[in-house]
Each structure stands twice: as structure tokens, then as C-alpha cells.
Image (cartoon, rainbow over all chains, first blue to last red; front, top):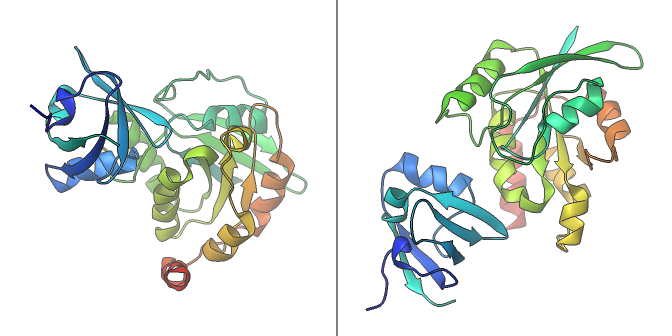
Length: 76
Length: 176
């Protein structure tokens, strides 16, 4: 099955963010760290612990709970 | 004595900046969140002396953790301060949000585009003149670890004045 949330991606996978679910504060926090809808990301680490992704030439670590709120479609 | 606050996102080089300006030796490392409390130092200018405060990094002026609380409190306590807003030139769009928030609160701001060499390596081109004319504040490219651009930063301090966000937004509207 195609992954639908960020934490379901495997390391090395590419995906596009389609929706960030959650409140205004949460979404703003991600925007300020350079993560927004429409961005293409590359998964670096998702197997355990924090979810680490590369987006817009910078690397961001997210909690698993945060990664559960980010909807994606696989592919670039 | 005129107060200068060094503000910016985490991990953009504020502490290196601070050490350069004051000759102090605060801990700097390549991790976000190295500075969690503020440090004070002094700098001799041409005609007057300045008190420089190294503020913890913050993404916005709505604090989300302890270090950001310190940063926002510092800004609110020093109403007459000038702010040097340090931005990572290779991630410029992230820093401009904070810069605008500080401008909006009426502080005179000098914008320092730090890590200019990194941005060049990544082939990122920034039109400084245009940025200057949009924001109407001094904008200086710097490389804190080598000291490039610091003379200009110190010279720009005199030129900094508070500007209205409204005019900035109008100019941004024109670009579209």
C-alpha cells in the first residue's frame, strides 16, 4: 500500500507534502522550520526514534507524533 | 550606552558574531540551541560604546520553549535597543519572518546575511540591493567565522532606523 503519512516512508524515499494536519501553532512551527505543503522531501531516518527528513537543502528532525500529522504522496 | 541585541534563528552564527564584535569567548558549536541564556559584552565604536547582548535563537516572537522565552523577554525589556538580525543566507526565507516581526515591533534593525560563503557554495544568489530597497534597512552580507562584512555592520548601526511594516508590504505587493 502506498504510504499516506510521513512516518510510513522508508529511508531514501522521496515524497511531496500534501497536508499538515493540526492546529495553527503546530503548522506555524513547521513553516518556520522550512516545512510546508507542496515541498518535496527525502526521508533520511524513519525506522525508530525521531523522523529525520531533508527539505529545501536543510535537515529537520520531527517527533513521531508530528510525523503522524503530515500527509504525503510518494514520489518527487 | 546604546544597546544592541543579536537576534536570529537558532544555528545561524549569532554567538560567533558576538565573539567577533566584542572579542569575548562564549561557547559556540554547530548545534541549534547552544545559547540558552543571554550573554552581555561591550564594543568600542568610532564615537560611542555599545553594549551587545547575545540572545538565544528563536524562530518567532511567540515563544515555544524556554530559550525562546528568554529571547522574547530580552527584546521586550530593551525597548530602546537596536537589533542586529542575523540570518542564514542559505536559508534566507526562514529568517526573514523573524526579521519582519522585529521590524513590526518598531525596533531599528540591521540585517546581517551570515554564512554568505555557504550560500555561494550552494549557488544561492541574493539581490542585496533589492532587499535593501524593499525592507528599507541596512542589509550586510557577512561571514562570521572569517570576519568578512563586520566593518560594514558596525558602520550600518548608525544608519538603522525603525521602519513601518506597511510600506514593506506595499513594496512586496508591487513585486508580485
